[in-house]
Amino acid sequence: MQFELEFCDREPAKVTVIQDGPIANIWLRKDITEDTVDNGPDGTPYKIWRCNTLFFQRIGTPSVEEIEADFDAIAEQQIAGGRTVDERIGATEQTVADNGKQLETAFQALAELGDMIATAGGEV
Image (cartoon, rainbow, N blue to C red):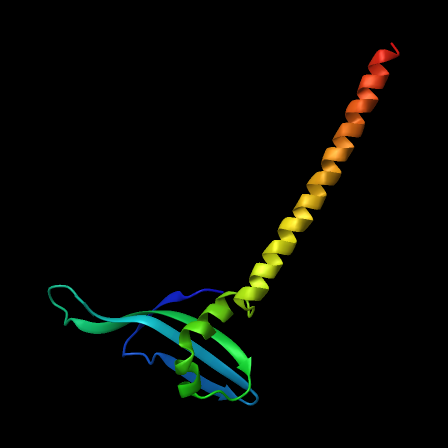
């Protein structure tokens, strides 16, 4: 999950929360900027807003104020798939350890294959 570029015809809120029963639909917006679109020589220019938007759902009824108060941490957690930094570090360390074990097994198999080739070559 990541922030995606969004265009709006009116200034968007930094945080929007819309409840749908027990589920909160949440939009986080950052880098909100106003721009004017030139509609050609015969057209009237009009304003648009650009922003980077992250949408996710959460069970519960969070308020806009709660989300705004922890905006950066919530955004980071959503981008990370709901895992904390410590959880992501732990998963990365486990992956590295698993890869090391797989390499060790492959090297042992390669060494055994080398021994078999050397033995077979000596019997000719």
